[in-house]
Image (tube, rainbow, N blue to C red; front, side, top):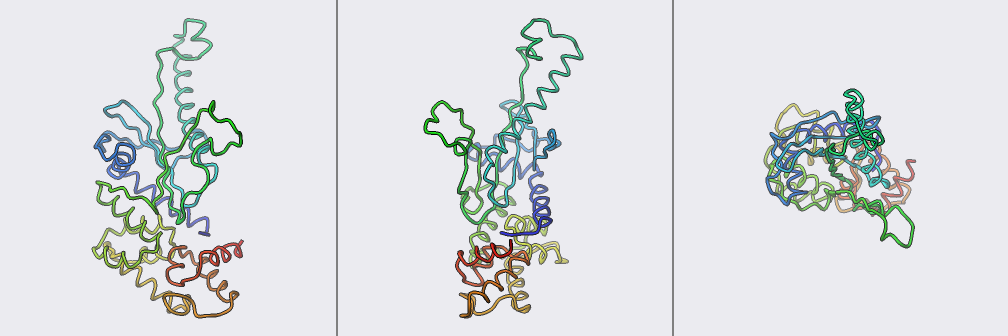
Length: 309
């Protein structure tokens, strides 16, 4: 979806703040990497500075647990990024480079390198690095379509000798994991329903109130600026999402943003439909919501997006 740059920045901040909570973070890692086993404990996680060299990770934790020490990272993707396997490999390698730099600096300070091999290496044979594992969370409405690993970025006939690097990818729109952390499970399940335009499900299933901050995270993951602003302006600290969605729909109708019945636009020329879709996109309304309330084809919506460029 086309958004203002500052909207993406706000959404990132909301999502990052949510995953900086150790309970949310641990539940995500346990579910996605350890089949739901309670391997990572929240009390064994420590939030660390996400800036490595000139790059800033979204969220980076140091885990000191039963298997040793690990860096665990999360990268949020609101839209598909074609070189993502390379980016994650680069981020992880920078974590290793940072550790190497520290080791080499310590040895120079101590002057404890003795053999020619140690002088050449800059470290001792006994030195060890902390491994890094990164999970990419994708909030797009369509399946991730291009590169899942470094091999996907090459164009050669024989890849048998290549060392592959495949990223850990979660696609929220199709994610069926059940998370033991109730807030995380609610955030992912409701975001999935919004991305898939399952608004009847939302009205029937999510009638309970949820914390305002959690509701803002859901709106951010759905990339829905209109819903985000609707929740932001609420004075209550407990939000009923189905009510917020319905209220947003009514306000949109009152402003004349939506024409025709719920199941489609009133018959008219494509030019008029494109103008309406363009206005909706510029207001920051999500793809899934536009498709649900207008009934237009995804092809026409894509044409409206291209017209904005």
